[in-house]
Image (cartoon, rainbow, N blue to C red; front, side):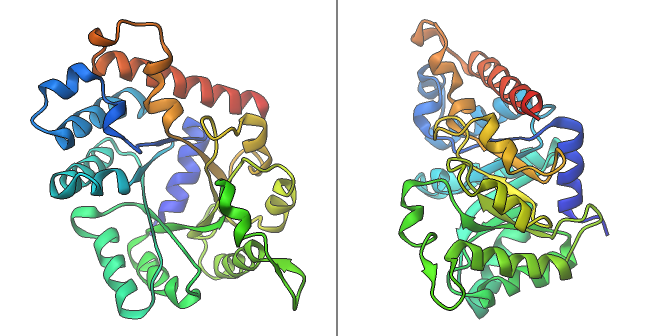
Length: 294
């Protein structure tokens, strides 16, 4: 079986490191398109499709944040499902940013919901803070289906220091190191041909201080790297978390999907095609900045 982590590794080799975050707020959709859509969910779906069409040859993968679709109710979840299917139809990889974290039977239901069926994705994001028994159901199915996951380790938000940076008395390590150690052990058991574990880690690029050490200590973990662009991270920050030019994808959402807002234009005349061209240019710029930094 070819695991999705191998597909992602190869996508990075051929396309670059850009992960386009489809955290599509309705406010990012041009007003001209919103006014002619049946509802907000349909406007978001049409916008997503145009963005995907414009970037699928540049993006190594897409990250679809479910919250932006849940807030629109049932129609929003339909748009979420159709977005995932559209990504698949383009022969691209989708990360469902769902951040689930529960144990036993509950976890198995989440697994079924997001590794199969209407919400099927290639990867998911999960939270480990209820313990490894909240991760194990995902691993069991990942082995069978070829799927993967990115587990929250050291994130990019300011509040990460509230818990992730706390020191564990018994070994003088930080909490995020404990997560990394567990994942590294897991990766040694469940590994793709590329040398990386089926389950990687979410490691933000907004804090440079420990980045080199994290990359060195967890060489068998593939990273999903948030924090680029609107959150303040840049190419130099992201590249510290890469390994031999691979080993991670760098997510950018607003700086790509809302790039049209920073282009000189008459707002009333902006349509999805205009926005998609701006997104494509932003994705190319990001791809090339990371490549040049490497």
